[in-house]
Amino acid sequence: MPNVVVTTVAIVMFKLLGISNAEIAFYTSWLYLPWVVKPLWSPLVDIFRRKRWWILIMQLMIGGSLAGVALVLPGPDYFRYSLVFLWLLAFSSATHDIAADGFYMIGLTSKRQAYFVGIRNTFYRIASVAGQGGVVVLAGRLVGWDRIGNMQAAWSITFGILAVLFGLFFLYHRAVLPRPTGDVAAHADEGPWAAFGETFVSFFRKPGIGAALTFILVYRLAESQLLKIASPFLLDAREAGGLGLPPETYGVVYGTLGVIALTAGGIIGGIAVSRQGLKAWIRWMVCAMNLPNFAYFYLALAQPESIVTISACVVIEQFGYGFGFTAFMLYLILFAEGASKTAHYALCTGFMALGLMLPGMFSGWIQETVGYVNFFVWVLVCTIPGFLIIRLLKIPENFGKA
Image 1 (tube, rainbow, N blue to C red):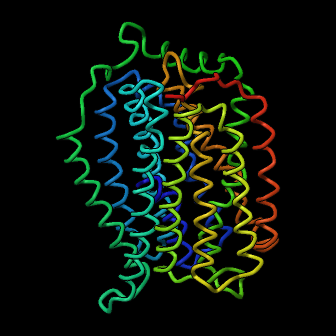
Image 2 (image 1 turned 180 degrees about the horizontal axis):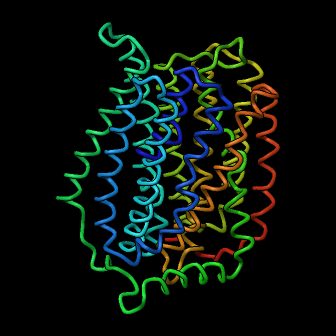
Image 3 (image 1 turned 90 degrees about the vertical axis):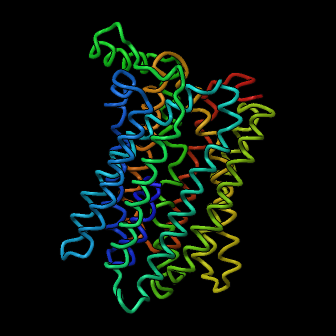
């Protein structure tokens, strides 16, 4: 949920509050920074305390950050101060990711991890539906209430509700979160800072590190830019080249139907890999990740008014994204295997975030310079590196196969 709030809901909120596409893309891309640099403190999550402890403490921090956004939104300088609390939210969420990913790998074998990757992503997608769909629809409905009547107050109340929700999550998980026997602080007999340094050195000594990092950085080159502009495009006025969807309709089309398709793609991708292995499916998943981007080019070119047509294009693109993303996540798990795999997986996801952050920063400027149609042409050009890099990857024949 906090990742969805930072990466998607914040974009929608700032668009509805009148912030320009260039500012939205540039400043919200900086919110990826905690995910980029989280490898710098990921060994500390391995070295100090249990993963369960980190998960609970970060949920408290997430709730406090959401409350901070709620408090500053009604003020005159809300954009600057809300970005500060959103950055704190991103930091807390990134640390939560480190602990939760380690928790996942501790409890399952590699084959079970592959089988459940789609199911695991389902719960991420449920949060996406709640965030992109439910939260946006709620804010849109609150604007229409006579007692509220303005967008800033509506979003303030919405973030207040999210803050309360995370307080409840903390209490719930404190009571029911499992206590795996493998959830112990690593390197107990070594100096913590020596272990910290060795974690980084061992990662960059892994065989095939060059091809792996290139894959992580370019596989989502097109999607990283599309993610920043898809929501403004759907919400922007038709005279500006967008589709002019009201917030409630956007919440249903992109935040609900789109996320359901994304979830279905992820589940089907996980099942497919569990039957034949990642190596057999990776080329098809690259196609699924990139080719459906033509749907947005069509929407920008034709600007259809039919909600059915718009929904169909969004569903096609999101299903392909979900199916193709399965290969990406499984490759990260594969490359992180070995000693300190929690920290190494965090390093992989840190480079993944860098691959999202840097292209995303300038996507708004590119769109405002060339327009929506030409921007989506540029997105299609950016799919090419993803097709080229998979030839260099070394994937065991049966990896991921149940």
